Image (cartoon, rainbow, N blue to C red; front, top):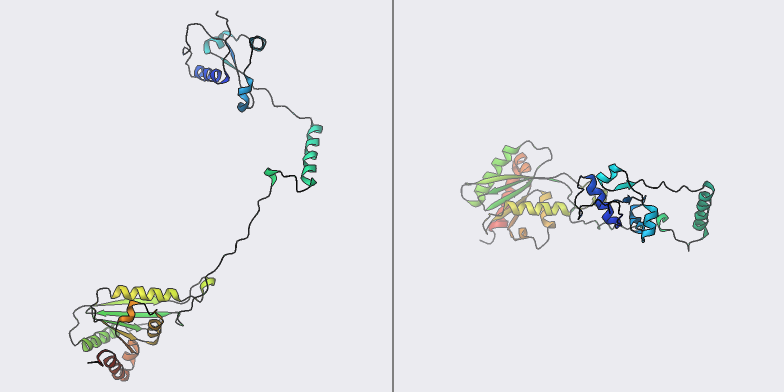
Length: 282
């Protein structure tokens, strides 16, 4: 019985070999050594077809292993060398494939099909023209939560303190009370966008200005007033949609604060305009 051969399935035999290589050699039931060979084919996915079906084929194929192999378990048989095609036969196969490819469109070779690229039209949004103003430099003054002055200033501006004092004097005169708290803000829009598809778009400027003014006036009282000082800010405010909450504020339109500071003669006209806009009904 010591030399008895036992036929194992390919999975069982391979598992036995792996366990033997790891040093596990006593896992089988019984005390007798099991002798055999594990065949490792060149293509492992065909291992299922290498299991011998009868004992005669087993006796003819399997041979006893050496004493070293008996100690270590099952031995692996070297893989069969790959089959080499005759060069002439290989050339005939290549020529046959070329003939099939050139035969016509009815023959499809999936692995050799080219990748088909589909052209997709990208729709660019129509340019939106909401205002003729493309750039603006703005100073905003929120005073006593009751008055907001928005004034154009030059791109290169160096009279900040002077117009700050002018805005405080105007607010005190309009509100008829000392200005206890005030805040200055700056808003700048340098010009048209750089994207060639959106060079003429100005709705971003409108939206940015509207959101900024809403943020500056979020704590304002219901009777707050709005002074638009300058032609650009006045145009932008006119271009806001009618549904904008900024349209609900009483507005006065005057020249910019920088002009009022540079040309004092304009102050009387600006004062009359504010009085008419805010207090004409009283």
